[in-house]
Amino acid sequence: MLEKINETTEFLKAKGIVNPDAGIILGTGLGGLTAKMENCLEIDYRDIPNFPVSTVEGHAGKLIYGDFGKKKIVAMKGRFHYYEGYGPEQVSLGVRVLKYLGIKCLFLSNAAGGVNPTFRIGDIMIITDHINLLPNPLIGPNDDRIGARFPDMGEAYDKYLIKKALVIAEDLKIRVHKGVYLSTSGPTFETPSEYKYFRIIGADAVGMSTTPEVIVARHMNLPVFAVSIITDLGVEGKIAYTTHQSVLDEAAKTEERMTALMTEMISTL
Image (tube, rainbow, N blue to C red; front, side, top):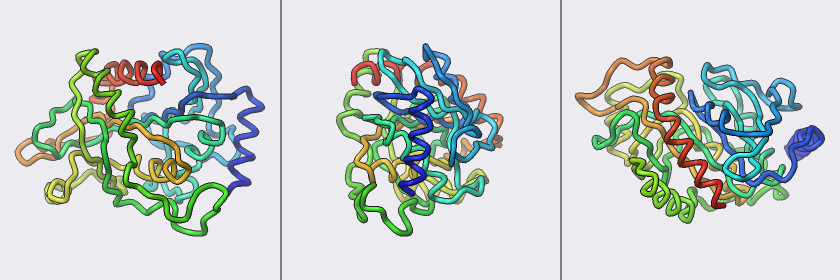
């Protein structure tokens, strides 16, 4: 794996991606944040050695390097999912390459269904912990040069960054929640009984991504900050027919507030 990581990293450095301060992976319908970046270099995933290609609408499949929040960042406009047929190494490769490019923090966003009855569509949830029901991306041989065999996940989401985000959100008058994100394989949206079960075991929101990226980041001692945009509700009495397009539409409505929060977060790194 390290050979692939190094090959991809060296290719991107040769293209001009050097010394980024942070990396961002943008979820379904949330790629518009990159419009706020300046002095951009864009590279299609299909042109990057070893990179998978995003196959889902709302995931543009571009790596973008430029100025954002007074810092140099690398943004993945689109991620990779197990439900696309990709294996653990492919799903996690982007995070590993961002780390080897030199990022100091990883920022993640996703669209998710809210199972906490206090949530409303359009809310932003700062992820404080997760329940991973996807295959663990670290299964298989471990390369000690990359990370330890048994990484601790006691602080999967950086407490300092969470505290900073709460202060920024209050200053910007952005309504945010804290909560636990649960990941499933998808691509089906959940049944009412599954929503109920996920709430019983401690979830506040559910989606189909993010946790493999966080596990891989922590494997490499990379601090993580992540948010979910609540695009639909899995609460009894509030469950409505959900489509991928409806998720895209609701994510777009909230993107401006998420971008404002991320901009200030990265500016103060």
